Length: 84
Image (cartoon, rainbow, N blue to C red):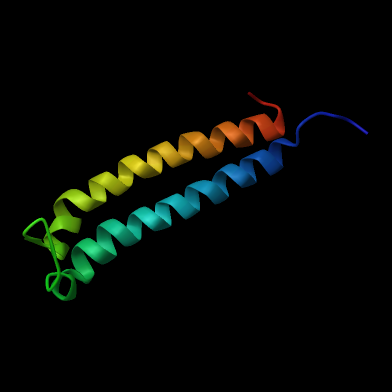
């Protein structure tokens, strides 16, 4: 039995993480910022309609948070698979 990391398992974990994070980003930027903008505009954030906020600010904030989440989770995956 070898202690070598499984490259295909590492790559699958990386792709799964990217798919999840891209799905979150898609929902926040496109679904909430474009498709559901009218219903969201009934709520307000800082005096601005929520749909407008998601389209102009929220999706950017979510994207930055997703980058940080990706870096943190990939650090853990690197350690788990011994590629750090």
